[in-house]
Length: 146
Image (cartoon, rainbow, N blue to C red; front, side, top):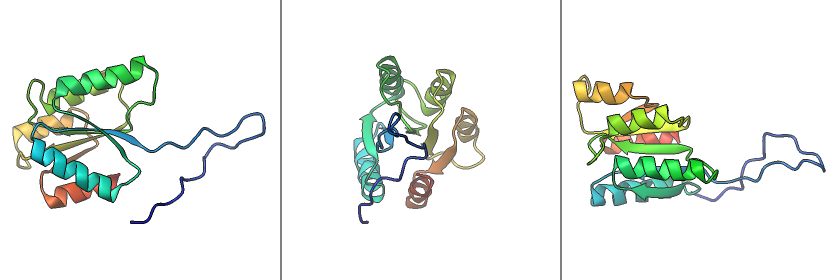
């Protein structure tokens, strides 16, 4: 995939008020399995090269990273990808807590739970914008959404 120049700012600029600088989307990628985390991160980086990845290993670290970003008033994450079966704080709990703390970005869940299962339904209801299977087709649907 070829690199493309950043899109023009949707905000009109004047000499007194320049447009805000373009920045790549920022995302945090949460997954406790190191090999799957590496594989998915590599695939996301190759398909969406402008994506700045920040990785954590569980839901507690995700909430801490989000809180640090908000407290520092730096750019919050645009996209957060969660696994439903993380240690310490699972994806369902993490998604609900991120939404309750004001996260308005794209919240994507990855799960191995079958469609129609109670665990998957709870995960989807926790505030996800997309819930995808941990398969190549599921990852493709995540990439298409980005």
